[in-house]
Length: 434
Image (cartoon, rainbow, N blue to C red; front, side, top):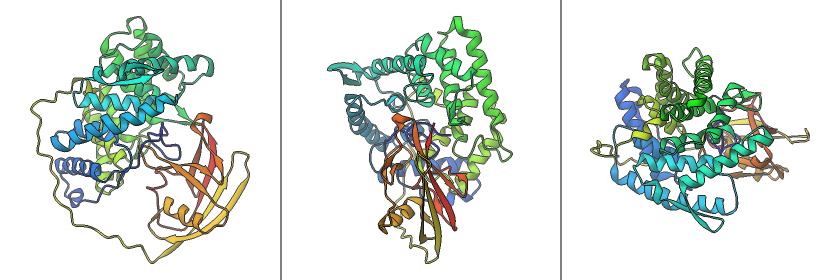
């Protein structure tokens, strides 16, 4: 479930901002689904106060698709998106960086607040362009890159988000652009390395369903229908006995897609319950994860942004003051063996003792501080920090490389700041292509 913005862990990845943790809530154990939805919304709202770095458009979309609202805090966050995130995107565009996915999420976030997207402009090559005009041009570049490289300029997750954002915003998607996505689904090209990306299938499904609903693909109608059928089959085939689709962190988008593709809510019941179970056990302590499951638990998908009405909203989402909680480090120490595998296949091995419950990032920082030859750098993303360089070697997205993390041979489903060290283990950090 590797997408775009976060190359060491399973989710939306392209370098944006680290989020704060979501606190545990006693509401998680009372068995009430409505109370759980309220608790998740409150936790997302509280994350706006503790966030580091840039505002997260995905969190904004989830809050806007929820049934309860806090107009003041949501308006403040919208302003931060229009200023802080907008300026960061302008900087990226000025330096010719490809940020298709983030532009798309920005557009969806603004649209979810019923903001007039025609008033949002960027300066590109000394010319002013609206957000949607630039996104449409960027999708042409993505499409052209497929022609000579057999892959988009970014990846199919970002490509799908671009199609989705344009379509939801009422912009007609170029037939050639959507046709490339149809063909990629037909030829099962939604992969990260050798692993199929459930998240990409999910977002592609929502994007193509929006295109179908818009009625602009008449001459490709049969191919479009076949692609949507294949995507739905892929998602259903990815269901696990415990209800998850793919894994815990891909289930939210997968359920959104199935609902968008016309699956009855009952068909998604097991997956819905799996997400509720995970939420009550605090699996989703990262706000980005909550932002993807919350619409699904409200039985909505990102397609709901297209018809979002911002009038007469329920304004009862409030936060109660929290007593400060001090978490003391565990006195129990566990040993972590760290193996680094470079792009050439050369390996280096290290060992470090850390407090039980430490994050992997804390363990790596402790190891780095011991001056034993291990170094690393991180960059930020919507999911938190990710490794960009280890022992001086880069793993650049532009080179289609990332640092793959595994524990005792099992790939991590969480990033370096979320994965907890609760037992002795071997962490492998491998420079990998995708």
